[in-house]
Amino acid sequence: MRKFREMLICTAIAIVIGVQLGFVSGFFGRLLDFIEPFCAKHYIILLPFLGVAGVVIIWLYKHISPNSEQGLNLAIAYNMGEVGEHGEVKDVGHAHKIGEYPNAYVILKLAANAIMLLFGASTGKEGTVAACGAAIGDYTSRWFRLRKYSHILLISGVSAAVSGLFHTPLGGLFFSLEFSAVGLLYYQALIPALTASYVSYYISTVCGFNAFHYTVQTAFEPDILHIALILVAAVIFGLAGRAFVFCLENAKKLYNDHISNRYTGALVGGSVIAALMIIFRARYCGTGGAMVEEIFFNRNALPYDFALKAIFTVLCITIGFSGGEMMPLMAIGASLGAVVSSLFGLPFELTVALGCAAVYCSATNTLLAPVFIGIEMFGTGTALYMAAVCIVAFAVNGNHSVYTMQGHIPRSVYGALRHK
Image (cartoon, rainbow, N blue to C red; front, top):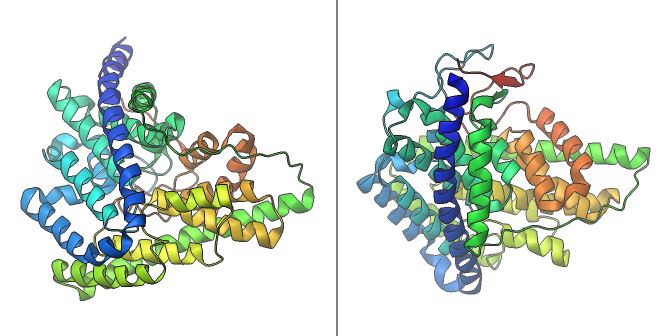
């Protein structure tokens, strides 16, 4: 009875969290729907100020709320305790030991992400909204004086945020359960997080926000050769995600070892990136959502798009433009999928969709979330292919992740964490 009562309490509070995140995601999604086309249209005027925008963002974080600069890594620190080498969790949901989320966190994260995308940074948006979801979950546990459930409400907030921004309720649910530690699914948070996810999805829709979805036509009966080629493509997607993580880790290390003044790094680095982007007519600016749409609707993909989008995203994140990785990774996967489709003779739309999910799967070291996000974004007809390709890409990844604080559990352990 005690467990059932706790679940009912957390589910009721999760509805409140879902409503909040539905409005936040809907508002932010509509704001970016205006900002990104505006930047693409006026990039000659806006891109030269990318370095200045980086300086402003760093100043805002430093002088208003220093801890707010952290994204999902901060959520992982709040959500997970010590994870032993054999997968045992010694302390779950230790927000009460770390302290409270900074009060200005949500406003600062949303403002910083909007500024960097306005001036053309090649970064994402889901990291910001998911981090805001974690913060709102933490705030809500304070408002209702339910700190002992802070980890469940934090997970519910992340689930609601991703669902509201991408209109993928199940994908948001499993992302919130997976991103903290590979191999552990916190089932006690399942019902509250699922509730928050669907509430946020509904509220975001009511707000008039329409997330990108594309139903892939899968009238395709593969023979043994095609199945083999799809699995080879999955390996390529997995290696691409792993390469992205490798490049990002080493770029950050190199940058931190040689650049002591972050203001100078942001100003000079942002200006150099802006100059290079102008040469490519701002094709690689923003989240990459426009690139994904262009590939699906117009089949307009250049053979080197995936490499250049990856390079610009790594550079932008390295110097401090940290909005997220999901949409850039999907853009990388979509453009790589277009190349693979051409080389292997696989169906174009299907291969592009599989690339979106599999590269994201590999780089984030999550499995179930990319599968469900891919199915919800591209249609149930892709389900079997999506699951197979993501499993292979996940295996190829080798336990590397863009989330540096993600708990790394042995691959033999992929089960449930039950808090008693």
